[in-house]
Image (cartoon, rainbow, N blue to C red; front, side, top):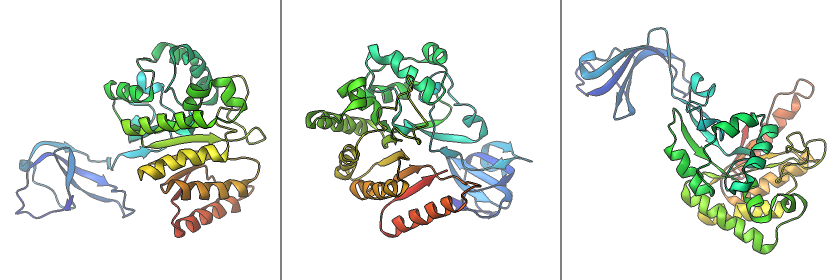
Length: 316
């Protein structure tokens, strides 16, 4: 992309957006200007008017903000995108790309006989109406790679990418009840890692998990009031999944972590980042009127991790 305004420039554009207030995402002050788009990309940004004769189409953005699309890193549109291609309200408010499969929650792999139970879980933990899922979900997949294929076929008004949510992996391999009360055997863990690899090979950007324990921090529970499958999974299981990313040399981890001891949580997250070698997206940092120092200390901790080469990023 170039900054341009040269009257002698004869570059052709598919579209020119004129007279907009440009907010370019670089933290620079907004300014009035024109954009030239070629081959689906922003090819020029100009504070001076671009010649309308250089474009096949000219759009007047007078009185409007022109900005890059927002990327929503944390959504639970896994069901809704199947009947709402714009993922409203996000798509209405400038979100052009979003991430599915957060918190270890999702719908793949899910066997046909487990579909209703998977939807019941999401009806409580993410407040998605069961009837809407029952009527609107396509269910033309079983495995995670097949789910990505289904996503590819769906008409979409936004770009999407997905984590492999580890909850469905555990249920697929161990069964729902067993996954809630014990650790996987070595053979079961190896199979889950194999399925994770298959999901990453198919195009997933990493894996996700929620670990809220079974105490006072367990605020996102299953349909029956019990903890979610991943809430009580061990550090060792998480590290095994992190090792998959380390071996591949890439991939993100999104983790919602809040167990009984916050200091121990932070130690675990730093170690998880070291084991995976990749970015950790941690939920959540939030301003707190009663304890305003907490968010500041969390930011300082993340900065310290960065200095040590551990890629910790906080989600608000």
